[in-house]
Length: 207
Ligand SMILES: [Cu+2]
Image (cartoon, rainbow, N blue to C red; front, side, top):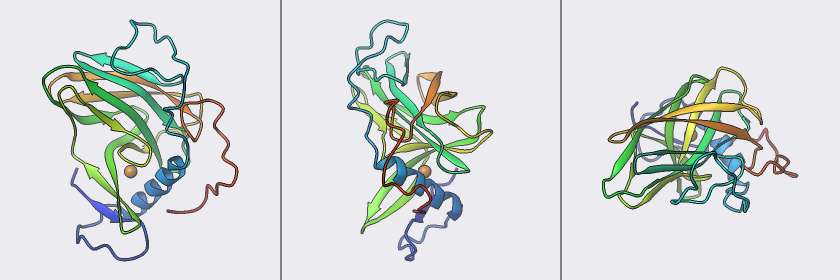
């Protein structure tokens, strides 16, 4: 998928890059803006037993999914309840405990037509969405999709993703291979299940 950028605000873009699908980018930005005002989920204090050995690379947050693939440890995976008609976002953190760098190169799910790696760039007060061809994971380091920064964008889910659903996400890495997580859909603001109401937020405001 080509790298693309799209200015979220109505003012003209300055980078000269061709817009891919402007409507989708705007919707996505609105979605990110929505989730961006919630908690990051890092404030969750209660760890949940994931049915396997205790994770060593990162704390587990209640209501999220995790998986290990060799030296790669995927933690805190969740999908905020779908706010857009056409898109949903997914967030997770990848830690590489080994000495070999890797990169997330593709994500797929049977529940959406496509999953795109996106980053959010704020320039001059305007948020710009940009597709990433991959997300590098440094050796002994961490790469993350977090609210307001990088995110995974699920386009055209086969059904609306609402809280309580489970979404299989298959992550493909350049070196480590492939792993599938079953990712929970949570409230709008993050993995904490009581955070589904956000007084004062206008869900219909475009980005
Ligand atoms: Cu996006």
